Image (cartoon, rainbow, N blue to C red; front, side):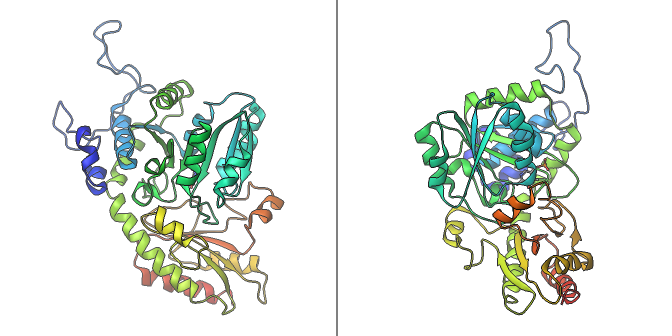
Length: 395
Ligand SMILES: *Cc1c(COP(=O)(O)O)cnc(C)c1O
């Protein structure tokens, strides 16, 4: 299977990569190898599997599948996106420095600021829209560059190819969190990144029933280090979770197509309401009003399903209006997370980004009226109707 990867298209890889028929029974679907250990003929007489923290066939199938989708050689799966991030950061030592974009997933920011800092690792945050800023922030002890694009929740874009050039010149590895796009809409390795990080919890699994993470790279030394740390630290996913993520990944290309169609239609509908009292601004990479619309068209294979919009002050302050909308939605669920088949709506300032200090939030532009919408794959008419009735409650 693997030898034909490069010639196959994503729709095919999603279904077949890493999934040869099971050799004993011919099962077409990789079985859930629900086992902690493997019987040996005698000491050392094993078949390549000794203990499931180290090796598990279901996990290996998932790792090969996602690696193929990202166009990378190696996948390393973790128990969550945060476990993937934490394990990557354990390639660093006390005294090392990281350069990262300043509009990060809240949990990633928390790992940097409240876990890694106390281990002696420092981070400089830069404006991801300005590639040169990454170069300017590099120091002699910088060991790693971290980028998220589009960012969460402000959907700022980072020019991956430009930042990759700077990283190559400085001989630094570039990690790109590709969670918001999935490999269907953006492939950072092709743009020069060293490794791609995913919370598979989101689009890759897509069914809101698993928490997971994965790292993909073609760098042999990095892969070996991550493989060692995966086993040594032990933040591995269970086989059933791996099975579910693989099952989700089979329909990833189909789902992303619908996420993009619904996202574009919803963003245009919201944009048409700007200036009529409730909505102040819509942020979506598929709208020509997005400040980096050209980069979006160049770097991404579709605008995705994430939309942010800002509610204006009216008779009620923006915060109260935003809360009313989130209480009033009926079909769209008020919940954290994103990327599932079902539409979710959330309020970053009080939910996903509450762990970021108030002054820092204000500095970043995460205002009290900001609402983030993860557009699912339901019928667009039903989604618009639900938002329209929720907006009416906030007039
Ligand atoms: C959710 C998310 C993460 C963290 O993943 P978990 O699976 O929740 O640990 C990291 N980055 C981004 C962009 C995310 O959306």
